[in-house]
Image 1 (cartoon, rainbow, N blue to C red):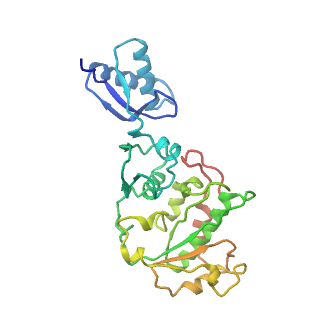
Image 2: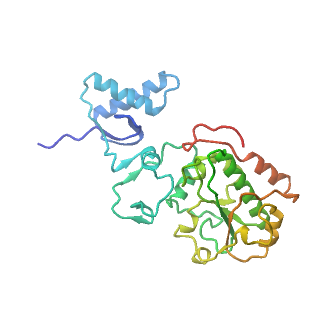
Image 3: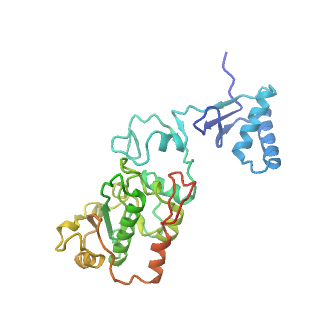
Length: 312
């Protein structure tokens, strides 16, 4: 005998069992499914602070308690993953070369759909899509496909256990953005350290992306940018490695102005200047608008972007 199909089938949304996702659910047009959403609507309207997902789960529990015959199922988590399970629990904070579910290497991937949830703000979600090569939209300014835009990239040095890891790396990013501003280039982000021991984290593990984008939305690119299939070959092959240690200054006395003088006439599409630790600020005037952007753009935040912390 054929097994009865469920009235609704939802993605499991939390680390705990049997929690139904209201934004990723297939619903069969039955009287019982109608009852679920009618009751869910009533609960949400009467219970202060109750969101649609909480109301849906409360309605399902209540109808099951009443033995209404409601058949609610959870989709197979190996095929339909929440953002928490795929990106955080399965350690996909950044794309990996050996990842069978990579956008450039979908071989033997057991995951059919990833729900891009468990992340707050549109800016953070777009950034995560881009880091994972899951974003193709080029925009009016040729985000990926521009052949004339020039870029600057750098790398983060491994922090010591005594360092404030986030503040140190944000300070370096500020320096990179300042240099790129003077050179009229766009910064390609490096990979970051989440703490003194863990490498390979996105910028969103350290700061609030919504605030950062408000000031620098078109002045940076994700760390995986040069791997993207839409980036022109002339850009990918136009990388010049110009580390600070190779320049005619003591790295301990190098200033932003020194570095700009050395690089300002370069025609290379991408300049990699290596590690930026120790670069001192200059007397160069960036202008009030840029100074304000650099000062206000950084706020500490957790990876899921739900708990912003202090301004940096």
